[in-house]
Image (cartoon, rainbow, N blue to C red; front, side, top):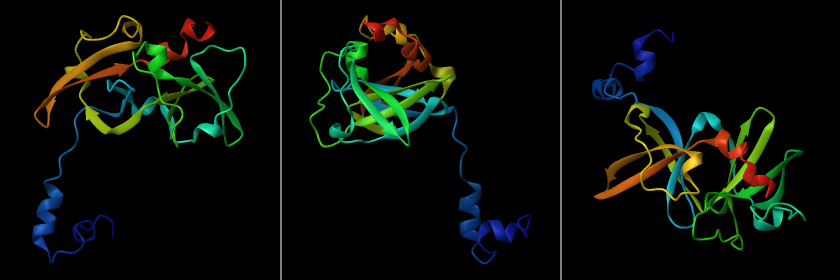
Length: 179
């Protein structure tokens, strides 16, 4: 039944619908999550490196004493404790994250058995990006450079957009967390 073309097209009666189905294009590249820091700078993470995206209220994040000022606290996700960090502050973004709003956006990334929630200003969208078009980073702050793999520069809605590719493993393994 599934091998029947009429099943896949919703019936042979509507030939326009069948031709629309055949014209769908396969996206090129890899799927990435696009997000912004408080200053408005946009970055991306490969979707395959993201465990989950949360939107907790600030009172759901428990502050912890005597830890790095980059860490906002911990968040309980189905019985697992996840540390939440201000990604912008970690990367040296000049504008601090407003943690007093009704909800935060937290991207949970993991490497081996280490999981970390990266608090960002906003989630923009999911986007297909071609790795072959990745360029060396040129317009980043010095503090960000060790954590970026490169950037894409393209036009979108009559504006030049620069998206920096964040290296989640180097963020997770950074010595900055001990400071």
